[in-house]
Amino acid sequence: MSAEDLEQYESELELQLYREYKDVVGIFTYAVETERRFYLCNAVDMKVRTEGADAYFEVSMADAWVWDMYRPARFVKSAKVLTFHDVSIEEIAHSDLEVPKDS
Image (cartoon, rainbow, N blue to C red; front, side, top):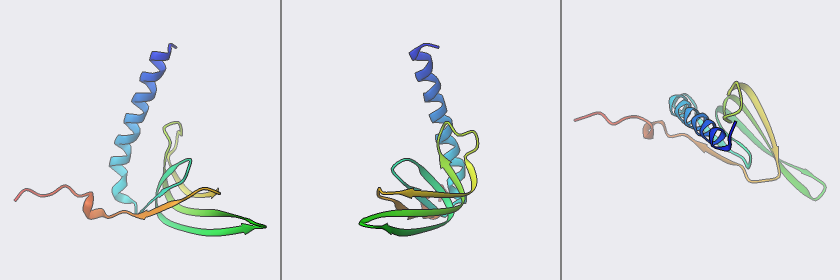
């Protein structure tokens, strides 16, 4: 497989992932972004943990979809992330996702 073939393959995977995201985003309540992954989920809980002088985040999600083009199954029942980096949790405004009706 040439470098060009690999690049085209990865571009196709990313496009398929984007299309899947557009199809599923409407069924989720939260968008969660960590330094390594992006998730959609319907329940999220974040706790700050300390160990000595260090602090880290423990993020638990339920009914989730993972943005990862190399995962064979992106829907997961639950996911837990431990990280020392920033975590962004946003509630998805579903009205922004709806297609406007013609007047």
